[in-house]
Image (cartoon, helix red, strand yellow):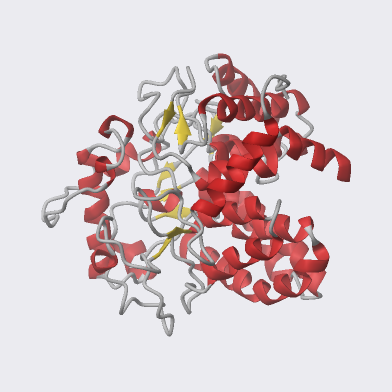
Length: 435
């Protein structure tokens, strides 16, 4: 890690803990007040990772609350609407999931799509932080995680790679990866709406109105089909094999296999999923960009996007050195690793959401994956940049990769969590002390 000796690490650690507690709504956290007033799927899993550094019971309750919204078919929604907030759009009514296919007996209001399935991996990290406190809770959670992954394989992995049915499902809402597929949507018939996000954040940091019209069109499309996975798969113009979903699913499935061993359950089905996901992940390799890339299943075209999602391959467990030269090139063009899109790319925008900015959670996965693959120098660069970025520019939602300008929401839960669990020098000391 780059030198942090002139920073007040104890004060930064304390601020990160304060942010987690500030955003704690009693059993679940919101990403940040105002902009995101509900419980988000992968945000929540990262929040648990942060809580595990100082409150192991609260960490488990975060994950358990997330799975209280699991549908009967195994899907874990990307938003759980615990307490309605009139200041957020699209609301629960817009999603229309009350009679959704697969929801079954679940009564907690939610959206109709999921998000990158990091829950098993981060639950495994929470368990490892304190095995004695987590054994019973992991055993209780395991069947729910298994059902979630079975849903992923049945509903989203027809090519081996994991697909998304909406850009929000990838967590990378307006990434250039979806531009072709989004252009194929005619948003005619979108009901009038008022965006709330641009009331909290500068519009130049958010997706455009053209993007948002198509997001809402896809929500209406799914709602009209009662979120029936098979009908959506057959009829939707938007179906994209996504590196984020694929590599996080692959990693989480590997961790699920470790859980199966721990709880004494047969892992034959899980091992089959791992093999299938590995094959699908390798199919995302784009020889032209020399990186892993999204594929529009409706056209067969690759996105041609060099993104931080492609660099999750090592987090997923692939030991592939072919992408290292491109990663080094991207880092050479960046002050802070890892931009969400190559600064040399034609769609690069240093402040607009997933078209350039750096996200601490993606860095956590990229950096840890590189370290596990033996790429110590690159891993140290990613970790050191993350630490400097947060120490110098605060706990923002995301950051400009060229100068570190903080962007999006402030006092952000998952940025604070990543600091506590990984980026902070005190986290490094903890990890080194337990190796």
